[in-house]
Amino acid sequence: MKAGKILMILSLFFATQIFAQTVDEILQKHFEAIGQKKLLEKGQFVAKGKVIRGQMEIPYTSYHKKPMKFKSVATFQGMEIVQAFDGEKGWSINPFQGSTKPEPMTEEQNEKMKIQADFGGLFYNYKEKGYKVTLLGKETMDDVDVYVIQLVRPNGDDIKVYMDADNYVILKTKFKTKVQGVEREFETLLSNYKSIDGIVDPFDIETKYNGNTVSHIVIDSIDYNVDLPDSIFVMPAAEPSKEKQK
Image (tube, rainbow, N blue to C red; front, side, top):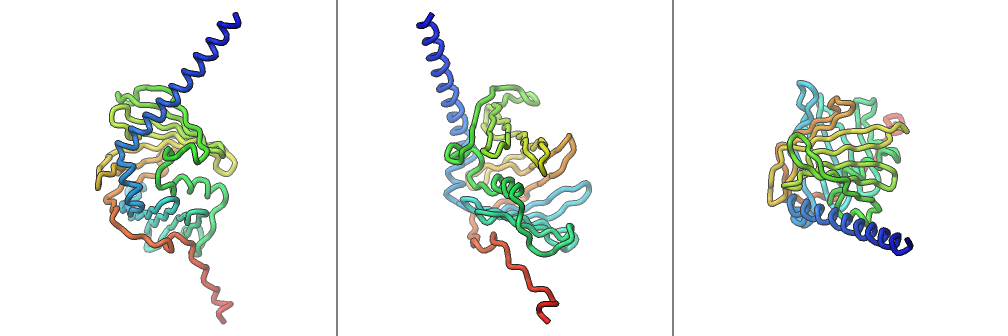
């Protein structure tokens, strides 16, 4: 009986080890497929496109720089909506919420911006980031075989990734997180992959909540041959009020 238990424990241990190695093997193929090495060598890029809201198309530009700098600017009715992360903290400008001044983000918003700003992507160096990654299995999604991989962040964010089992690009994510203390799940569909300078990216990104589209970004161009100063990611100092100027 004792020997049987030992053999069972050993078999489970080795099965777990093989399973973990399989996850890393899949991720390695994913990195190779999307040109991860070239992306990291470039170290920065600018994407231009549009945010689609019903019949409206809102011009959109995003700036990315490794390891953790991000800024997006959407122009609507002559005003700019800005979201940015300087590597440590986020800030925003949203005149449609009653303020044209830059405002620091909340702790909860900063956590979301860390995902957006992570230049190498969630899976890159996931162990160093304290993320837990598990291969949940393989299934069929819209007649396509996909690997289902779960990533859990230290703050409890639960992200399920559906990766094409043939070409190793991500087709869908399900992101379970807390918004103002309430747990919500968002689904993001990634499609229209294109290769530029050996780097493969989705040019159509649509996010849904409860089946309704909450964000739809269509990329028109990506430029990896840019030189972005760190200053563009830093929150500008608020201008003194007119009363103080007097």
